[in-house]
Image 1 (cartoon, protein in one colour):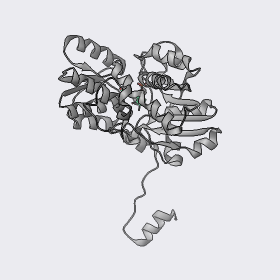
Image 2 (tube, rainbow, N blue to C red; image 1 turned 120 degrees about the vertical axis):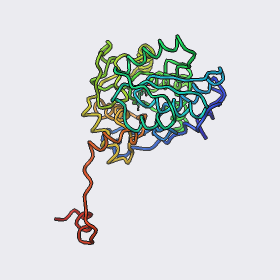
Image 3 (cartoon, protein in one colour; image 1 turned 180 degrees about the vertical axis):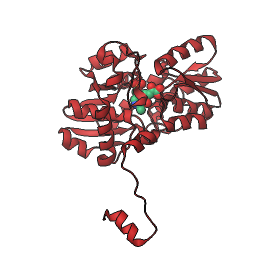
Image 4 (cartoon, rainbow, N blue to C red; image 1 turned 90 degrees about the vertical axis):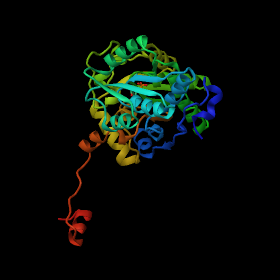
Length: 332
Ligand code: AN7
């Protein structure tokens, strides 16, 4: 099964697919007892390249191939790049990705390179990369696969269908991280098409919270590199989504994000990347009521560096039974 079981609600045929979607929705007992809500986690890291981007990419690249495109391109904080590179490889078209130099997680860079994309490290941030890519596609026949491409939104709306089908009804609240704001736009479209209307609670990192401040942020900064975005392309759509759902977009600090990131891994057994933990950080900081689904947008393995910085150290040990006993039992 894949998200293509909703093919009758999607605008293209599955020409390029890796069996994306149909991700787990798991109960979160620890978060439920901490918040008094019935909390569930939508584990989008279980997609083929490890993030929700695959939902949109299968549709966008299928559309590009149908239109005869020979190359796809995107600006990215990392996950879109990894996904675009994989689907380009699968489609047999050229892939190019423009990422902010030094600001994307190691796993994502490894993916984009392994899939054979041309990886361009821009001396600038994501917002500048997106502006330049939009200019580039005016000059060259390349298909732009950022979420300004409506096929991306169409694919990603299937997350909302799945959650409603998995629960048997819509949740009361959906908590979701917000960067370029394509995903919150997609989920709202999906819920509306489904005839559902949960409150959307979007969360931005405090150092990259233009939608909270009501103005673009020129130099966004956050440990959650995936959402280090200062001028979201889907600004109006995102505001319409949260307003229409009687929800809100709020900010969470890096400290709150990292605490939620660690809690998810250590207590719920679910390893997501820091940006994804913004949804849970927001729930913990701001609360909610009823049945709550937190979207965990990307896999923890995407960003091994942040994990290793935050986690406890390994225990060196000689190869004797006494040493192993001490090491394992925590004795003297
Ligand atoms: C893990 O890859 O923008 O609000 O270029 O990777 O739809 O942008 C990634 C975004 C949340 C925010 N969680 O989603 C990119 C990129 C993770 C992400 C978001 C991203 P949008």
